[in-house]
Length: 307
Ligand code: AMP
Image (tube, rainbow, N blue to C red; front, side, top):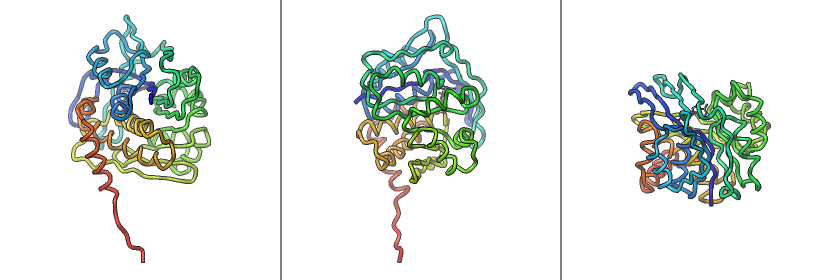
């Protein structure tokens, strides 16, 4: 079972109340691949990097079953660069810099060896490029999941709405759901967004968990209350990687299994925030993930006698 994963592979400079990390490896595609690789192989990566992206990181990804045939390396340009600063509550951040660099003239090509993949994860990237990947696939995947962010809503809303018509699941945070729908109530926003195309909608609420909407149903997954959140960067992408990884592993795309998948996504995201960048994701084992999933079961398990 293969999963195609599209997204940025980047350098990030991150400031949190706990410190600053300069030019560390990041990118939506990087986080998705590290997370999803725990559940399914191969992950077929589509991205672009410049001359400066570390070979060590590529090797590390390969070691985890990530195929890089679809990652273009541009010899005379720099990799995508993003810089952000988190507020005291760590739930919100300001983007300080977005340097597209190699992304400016990226024209993703789906390698022949990727054709036939049953799952497609469109990580956060220019909507036009997300659409181009969908259109290059000869057979529609069983499930297309899309992530995006306010940056693309600000500058490419029309393109984004075109992609929305073609995807099954959309992941956004609460502010983005409101921006996309122009509606303050998240329940009303969800209905409006599902009318734009996706049959399933996940609204991430940072340390307050995530909501999964489908038709008239709604399900809530908490985030694990952690003593220390070091760096939330990539938590959304890691969530997406855990979510699609679980669905691909179990080959079940029912609403019931998506409930489990958002718990798996939340568990993976809870690791991501424990260290700067994707560092923590590289350390964890299957035992760590299973133990964390059990903590989630404990967190939401309760008995009630309704007499
Ligand atoms: P998240 O914290 O899950 O929203 O993802 C943060 C990651 O997304 C960082 O590692 C950035 O390199 C990457 N990123 C930031 N802005 C963009 C953008 N406009 N398009 C694609 N990736 C981005």
